[in-house]
Image 1: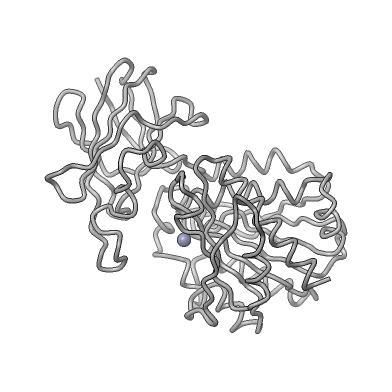
Image 2: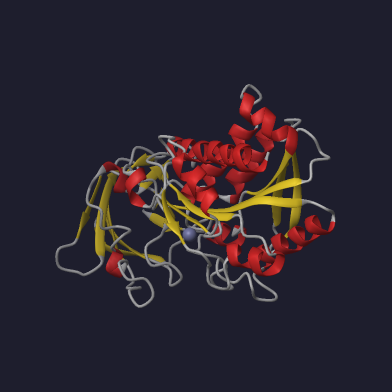
Length: 370
Ligand SMILES: [Zn+2]
């Protein structure tokens, strides 16, 4: 007997409807219009066909109607969901296609070699993945891992401090994964952090002598845990920075930032790192953007000819109220802030993208802040 469920961390599915022998419709949860993450038991040796129908969200996101911009990429290897038997090693499913008669409906199939498998829209990166990563780097003398506060659901929100000199007051603040579904962001966070911990890199060493990095590797923790598209249970968090109180994970960052300013830290650059909801092969073309309000910042970040992070500038002088950048401006008069999307065809590409971003930030610091 086949059993399909989503009762695990980051799981996301309303229900599976049996349409026929080895043929199931995956009904998406109401809080996601394209994302799913489920477990299937009893599947060994079977070729199973799954189909799903994407909700129409065109009213708020033109271009994303009926699965467009998400599922509608064809059968290319990078456009397919992934399957795993151990939640560690992921492979693409065998085949995906668009249904020619039902709007927004897509179908994929896979032949399973084990009896229990996980299937996800894209390589998942969960809160547990973050915790095991932090466990691996926690003994590095350059890093200090603390808790910023609890989420609304009582989960600890990590904050990383990276520097060679704890007396440094020049602060670089970076936040990752405001949107729970943007998995590339988390792989890029690892790439960026790994680069900052690279003892052999001369430029990194020079920068860490003078600057202190504060990194929030996962903002929407509750959203990641429940497998929500944006954040969990209290609406989208990314444009609610001006609310009081804002969603708990954002409130934690606001409180910490106020504390750092009181303690005499001087913010020199801040960044929010968003990314793709899936790992795509054509990374540099998909959303290679950087939004900045300060021209010199843009020039340096954009001119970094790194293969994995070479964005096109989208220069918006001022962001609407609600956004991180605008909050820093309104609250602290701080405007050296950027927002960007990171990408990658595989987790390692996204990590390299994060490394490229780290290099760009270091260039900026050397040119403008030394
Ligand atoms: Zn985003």
